Image 1 (cartoon, rainbow, N blue to C red):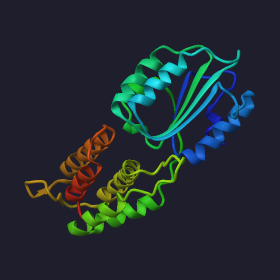
Image 2 (image 1 turned 90 degrees about the horizontal axis):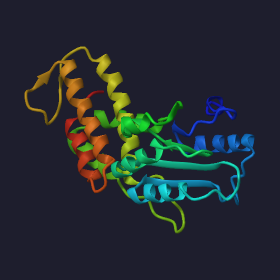
Image 3 (image 1 turned 180 degrees about the vertical axis):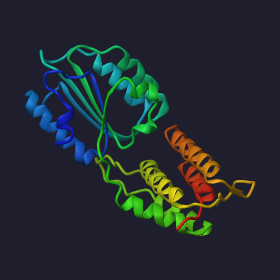
Length: 252
């Protein structure tokens, strides 16, 4: 009910950005649609889009459909779930949310809002849920304790493409798995840095031992850059994740 507590049927915002998992949030949005009296099946004014990466073509299609005349006198609803929004798509979305259309409302679900442009996030009513990383946190902790060679092997296994079933949208591509793992690695790294009271050596960074403050700055800037490039079309997920294997400090 956490999501429903943030939604007011009498004062509906033009665009909601909800941080969390699709499987947990979509059912809550469907419940809210029931409260509003909006059908979620066989309703030409209700659009449910579920993709792994939201691309420039998706944004252009969305812009086109948004401006089409409603089939009814009621509200037009767009429910969009994506693991990441590529940079070009975000720039197109900025234009969509600059000029709200009456009785048109967006509910966008993404695992991590930090992957979006700050200017885009500012257009939304932001709702953050308590994301459950669970297994990802355990894997990230294991990764940090591994020697370099084993880390490279770990990355190779992490990025194995899932088998594709005809007609089914996969929401667990290598890019989305990389982003989830990156979030977990950032969380684990922060807690381990705080527990470590001595200088840290970052593999692949010249200059030997750094203070904790310098190590934090170097390492988390690198994580930010990796996340930024993962959201750009054509970027090499393998190379980006292997760069983490090289720079992540060995902490147990």
